[in-house]
Amino acid sequence: STYRIRLKGALSPSISDWFGDITVRPEENGETLLIGEFPDQSALRGFLDQLWNLNFTVVSVDRVE
Image (tube, rainbow, N blue to C red; front, side, top):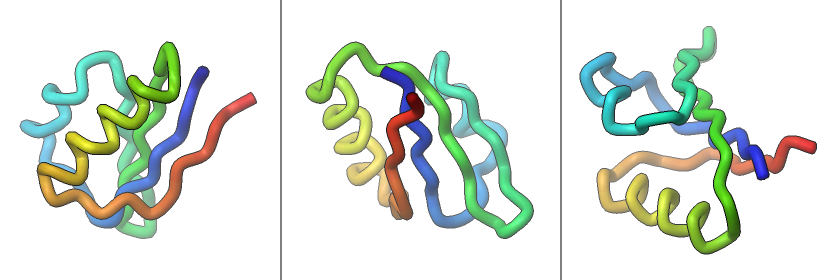
């Protein structure tokens, strides 16, 4: 499934490489949108845990139909 994950704040370009195949899109409101595919809920949870460990603030997670 494809998910849109909205983060608070802008990311530096150097950290974008860490996300691999995830699309990183800066938003005009200063937030960052991550768009990527995850094979299952545990993969999504693992990614969200990594964001938490890196001290990113997750604003929302939406599944794209």
